Length: 117
Image (cartoon, rainbow, N blue to C red; front, side, top):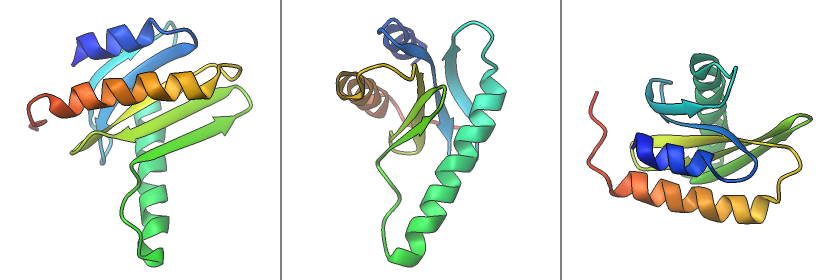
C-alpha cells in the first residue's frame, strides 16, 4: 500500500497521500515535507464523517469521491472499500488528470487484501 502512495506522490502537484479508516485511523501515509499525517488524518476523517452524515437525511449512500478546494490547495477523497484515500494537491494543478491518477491508486488499494485493524 505504501508503494502505491509513493508512486502517487511522484505525480506533479501531489503534496501527500494517505489511507485512513472512517474513524481517522491512518492505515498508510506518505506526506511531503513538513506535513503532519496525524493532523491531515484528523481533518480528513472529520470531513468524511460530516459529508456522509449530511448525505444520510437525503437518503443518499456514503460518497465515493469528493474534492475539497481551499485557498492553498485541494484535497481529494476516494472510497476504497473499508477506508478512504485522501490526497493533498497544489491549488493550481489540473484536477482532471489528477483525479484519473488518484482513481487508479484507489483501485489498486481496493484490490489489495482487506484492511484489518
